[in-house]
Amino acid sequence: MSLNDKITIFDWFKIQFVENEGMAFGKVIPGIYGKLILTLFRMIVVGWGIFYVNKLIKEKQFPTGLLICLGLIIGGALGNIIDSAFYGVIFNASDYAGPVAQFLPEEGGYAPFLYGKVVDMFSVTFFPPIFNIADAGISVGIFMILLFYRKAFN
Image (spheres, rainbow, N blue to C red):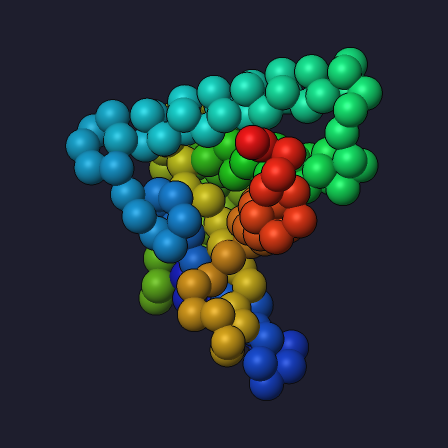
């Protein structure tokens, strides 16, 4: 797919190829080190999350649902880290009107390690931002914690 190409699955659900340079809703940390700072921050959050879940498991005083929510958040963040770390290395740049990005091009990818974009592809009519599975996992995990497990963090 070229950038912004769409495949309609249902009237309310489309697969749409976009590349997100930043974080949620396309927000970007400005400057030449902004992308690196974002990726390193994600890595720190995932590391802390794994440490925290491990601590909860050892203490054996946790609701199983809370672990599932934390797993969704950590898994989603890890998915976005992997995408950001490797996508720019293994694909050449995409273009709105041009050819489709190639996997493992001879001239190399469009960005160095940790500086790639994140691919988003799900578009639903009732939620304007385009997102990916990792974003959905993070959002659902956070929403479920806020809805059901706020007291666990008092």
